[in-house]
Image (tube, rainbow, N blue to C red; front, side, top):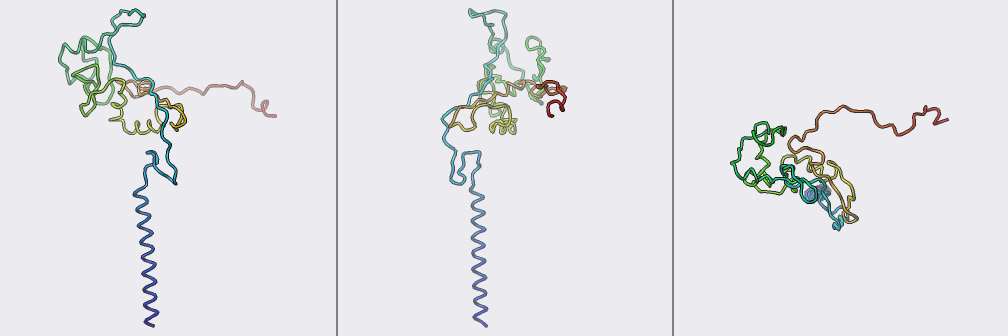
Length: 213
C-alpha cells in the first residue's frame, strides 16, 4: 500500500515538473520573440538586406519671400528668411500671421496651440527646430511632424498612411513615399470639410438587362 502511494506521489511530481517546464518555455518564447516589422526571425526566415533606397517626394527647401525679380533662367528670385529675421528679435509669443504688421499677413495658423517658434528656429529662420532644441533643415521636416504625430508616422513607415509606390521588399526594388506636405498644409494640416461626390461612371449608360441577357 505504501509503495503504491509513493509511486502515485512520484508520478504526480513528475507530471507537475513537466508542466512547469512547458509553461516556462512558452513564457520565455513569448518574451524573446521580436517584432516582425523590425526584421525579426520567424520560422527560420529573415528579411533580406535592403539593396534599394526609399525616395521621399514633396520635401520643400527653405522658403523665401518673392522679390518680384527673375533670375537668368526666368525663375523667381526669393529673399532668404534671414534677410529680415536676422535684423530683429523674434517674438516668441507670435502664433498667427494676422498678428504681424509687415510680412506674412493673411497667413492663418490652425495647428493646435503652437507658436511660430514651436517649429521655426528663432536663431536661424532658414532652419527648423525640434522640441529637443536640435536644428534641422526644411528638407528633413518630416522628423518635426513625427515628434507630435507619432501614430500617423508609425502608419506612414508601414505604408498605411500618406501613399506609397514601389516595392515593399527593398531587396527587389526601390520605394517612393510622399512627404507630409504633399497632402497637408504645414500651418493648417487638418483637412477642411468637403462635400462627397458621386463615383465616376466609367461604363456606358446601358440598362442592366441589355448587358446580361
